[in-house]
Image (cartoon, rainbow, N blue to C red):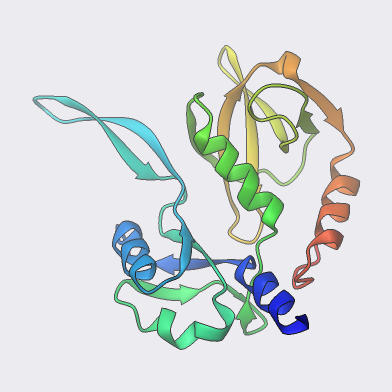
Length: 193
């Protein structure tokens, strides 16, 4: 029974893979056929060519893909075509807090437009009070006429932004909230200051 708890906890430890340029979808498909749980967040964008415009789906974090339970099958993952590296800290796969993965999942599933955003280190943190993103924490920034909630993946130094109504958020003490969520991370591999 104790061993089953360790296995189930291991499965939900998320890490990031660095992939070759434009190989995120191919690597995701290969990993899924080998039984890995993966997450490739995407967003819709309009590309314009000389003769037409087309709405296409692009990776939210170009060159990166999230994978669960990579520790025991590292060799199998690294031997996949298109995989450059597993994002590591001190030689072990860096654990991405489940809260960050869930926040990104909720942002890409939200009907509002999500897009890549430069990772923001400081600023006022907010928590969404209502709507489909209720409970998600991030940083509120203004872009032209609208407000955007920026959700970061600290270990990658990348972030995503989603449009949000400023009336739906509450200011939080960002440093203490981040510290508490990292302390609750079962892996304990990353400690942010």
